[in-house]
Length: 201
Image 1: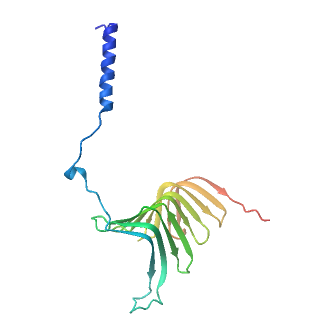
Image 2: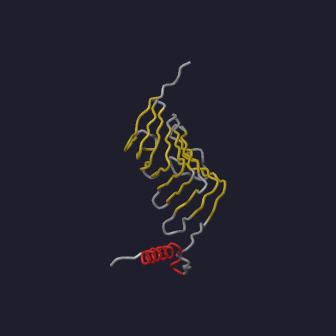
Image 3: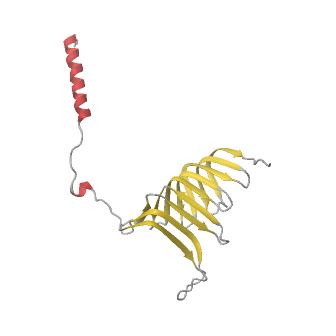
């Protein structure tokens, strides 16, 4: 079949009309009932709070706090508590800072723009400008880190930068896991290692 000029124009006009109809269609259907999904509200919201974690070598009797030791201090502008759900969690939508203290009372600090603590699994998801600085000057920067509190293990599959002042190196890479004290550090893929030499004046 041979198309004439008027038939070609009609065909092109029909194709454009159908295309415009499909492009301009939008879903105006209002979902209700089970299809709408439930809005989840926190059971509690805390603002501008500080939470101090302590441990004791033996069970306390009465108000004896002399033998307890501070192991972490968590500070955040806002915390939303969803621990009443089937899979409980707590969010920190405006970021958090956590200070950790080892047995010798040396302080390391974690900062993140956003965090979720999954109560059932003891896993913490840290997101956005995550920075860990240890007491001896080591620094890890990443867009996201996961911290397994039970096993004291930290890991990510995202890009990272690790600065170690002890040997004067900066390592960029993607994917890594390590223990809380940076004694074991496993980088999955590295892009390079820079040696930083301090200027002695």
